[in-house]
Length: 317
Image: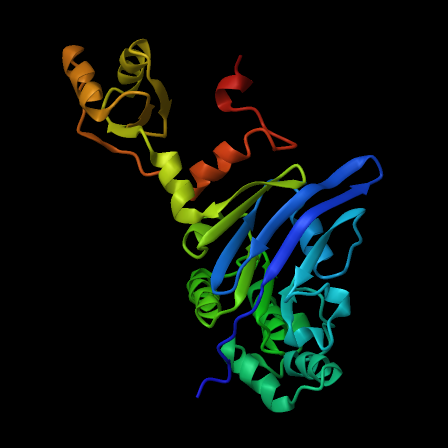
């Protein structure tokens, strides 16, 4: 029998959070929910309010307005909080001279948990061979696994992880994807903050996009990708500049996506093919465009980025 139970509960509910740091607005009405049984990705540019929101949820930061409930209550009102919500905000928050097992035993003792439970979570995250090594000798990926083990100690119905893919090698990334999905399959509410859109797309069921202190998108990942893909055509051609001129003159919005590929919006595929034929533009493929989560993210956060570098075209003007 698995040492991890099947769970469910109200998850996380964030409503109207507002917070300032001096004159800077950190949160400006942040609201979203993380339901059980779902991996919810939490993304946004630097300064969007992600870290502040997670700290508020965990009772580590106060707000001027709004509420954040975990498992139906404010975090600070929870008894035995590790059994209600497990979190990883900083994987380096461990004494370097203490072994991984001793670190977890210390946490477990504070919550009335057993050494047997410690050994179960160590095994679950794949650290058993290194459990008695000092954490100061751990790689970043190993520290991430140790932080996740700590988050699982109380077998909580809610798990919050900030940038869990950082420092993971390819094997670790594959493991992390399956691990997060398994938590949701057990009925847990899982909130994952990440800058790696490819990993969010391969893991999350739902996406909350933060921008300037509020949620600017809150929808299933599949719906966001479908909306971004709608009405767009992917064109592969040996003459991309010629193709872009022809299609732009016909009213299309065109963009080079690198090499011999162009994305076209505003014209159906049949019209694109006809125009290319009329102007003797060679092409090898015209197909419906499939957006990536990175495309979705860049479009949604276009006006919410605090610092933006110039494009190569802008830099040479």
